[in-house]
Image (tube, rainbow, N blue to C red; front, side):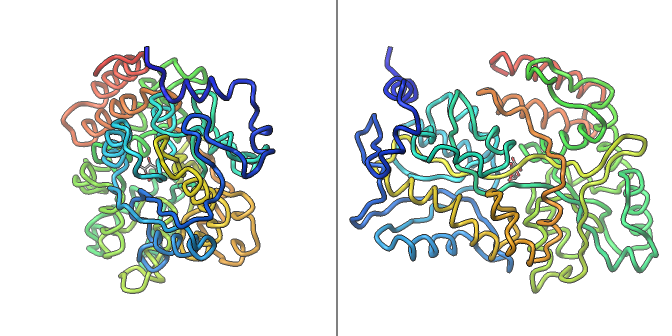
Length: 441
Ligand code: GLC
């Protein structure tokens, strides 16, 4: 039986602790490829697979990060490979490429829900041997948990995605309405402002057949007091009464026209476009939308308010957010290990200042999020980022893509009206159960 790179690594590192390896500092070598993990001193070029990241002006953030890195390490050039923005298409393209043994991209930005699948299939390098002891404590624990799989940590955190409710301050003021404190109030408020003809849509969110729908559904599910699986990670709980409340509410948003029926095709960019062009009163989106909706040239600049997501009336708590975010992975077939590691570490350490200065992404490095620079920015998303209750998706399993597919397909059918809430939930429940056992769906 051919040994996977993962088992080779696990074998050859057996008994050698990360501390022992990192104690050697620049002498650390990849035990499989025999490559040096030290920062290269000769001219080197690496490739970075990264989807479009926006800066505060709605421009491209990646070139700014690359420029900062190249100033720090002038001998290393980074070539940007543009990845698809939709996380599923991004992952599908990348997994095919890496599984075929391609050494490019050397470094890739990956979703927080990827490590289970990537670790199991040897599509990413375990990174513990290359960081100093105690390194992972510099990041929020839920993020490191999400980056961990198969007994190792497979990605260096880059930014956390937390979701918020964005609203048009000017329109609420015009109608003498307050910022809604519950989902039910949001539906009433949105209907009122829509009826007055001030906006075409009341509330836009991400309901297409893709990962983003899984996030939106799991957030509403948590608001209703439920979860996809129980604390043991294997008992499927999605079909309970919380599932019914969450999905019925989502369906009703469309049925009552508070949300356009097009939400069943919307991904993040569609909802942002609808909001910043003045077509919607409310928007559910990640932190970057704060910068994007206040950028010059948008209809919303200066007119946007943002608050943590509300909850359901009669249920405890509000301010829940899906735990999202993107981390830096290294291709296990890279031929530029030293350069790849230098860049990956830069993004998750020094590069965090560039994130803070140039974008609205929430830095993963706790000291950056708590820094004086962060506080001085006076950004409501950064200020609230420390307080939200994060809801993780059940992504620890290598079968997570199938689990998620069962969730987003079921939720999309119920919201679009092609299946009833009850039918969708029962399909989700049985498909998630089968997916967790590795069944082909
Ligand atoms: C954002 C989040 C990611 C999530 C995706 C869903 O990119 O960071 O975790 O899977 O949205 O669309």
